[in-house]
Image 1 (tube, one colour):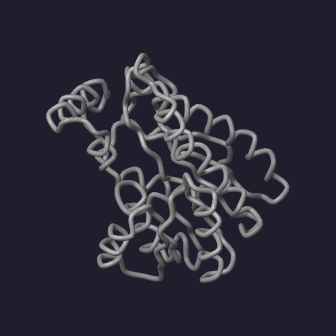
Image 2 (image 1 turned 135 degrees about the vertical axis):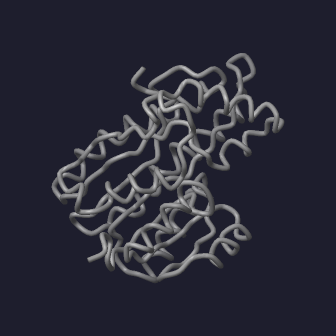
Image 3 (image 1 turned 120 degrees about the vertical axis):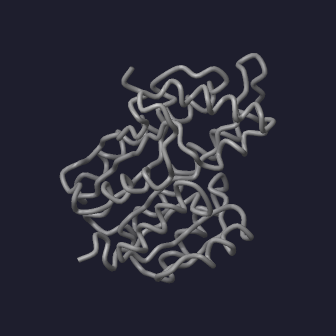
Length: 249
């Protein structure tokens, strides 16, 4: 039997990278999937390549009303939710002496406020015994220049997850997170840096990884499938590093 047969999964940031790779894998494993992203054109494009039972919802997680819209549309179509995968996030780098209020607000609204409000909206609709999964990052475990605010958002999200794990224990809902290291995703091309700078940054990251390479979205998706499935039925409250060993050295 497929690992997520007839389960309903809601995925934010699903129009590319880790979110899209996970949506494809969840569909392959029998789930009904709600794919969410900020750009309708991108969602329309990826919908052409997907097979299975799914819908797309255009929603910006940094907006409270869009989080409500996402859950409303998901439950209107499929009813209850079994897997809530809060994956959307942004990581524009900026050195500490150049941090602006706008930069701070943009990152915290997307990376922290968004998943917290989405969780609030979804909780009444998540089946007892369901699972909530977050995308964190190994950046909050190590110090990477230029990623101070981004690291702070992921550290804050991790702290929130610990409290949430306790608050939903009476319903048997498992709360876990994946923490990718350097992964080949579009997030690097969205940093607003010249292509050659991004390429050099990538080489630097790869050299720090014990496995000597970037990971792939598909490799992360396999861990997201494991944590959402009954294979991880006794795994709760963890942050699973998927980083080729980067966080361990």
